[in-house]
Image 1 (cartoon, rainbow, N blue to C red):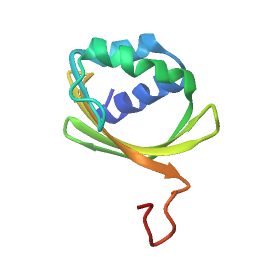
Image 2 (image 1 turned 120 degrees about the vertical axis):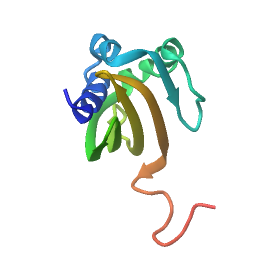
Image 3 (image 1 turned 135 degrees about the horizontal axis):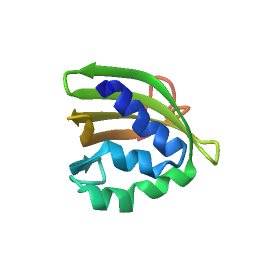
Image 4 (image 1 turned 180 degrees about the vertical axis):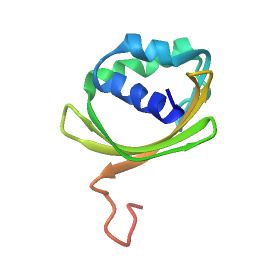
Length: 120
């Protein structure tokens, strides 16, 4: 599988509540970072992040850009409450498995700031 295909399968595993597939995609030396998390290891990642699968309904990929061993994915997700959110993630793939993820998030869809303005 290409790195982009591996990245897509990761998100599909969340939407399909398919932990076995996700576990097969995540490397043993995995590191997960986000604005709230600083290089969680595999065990901490599954404890903290996997429970979110219960509220994920769907991902729509806005962009999937593969460059070498990295894949940049921007998506809009929909949760079971009907809320839509947009995130960008950088996944590093090594030997067919995801060894690192950096998540960048923070905006709602539709945007809560007025057009041409900000919320602060």
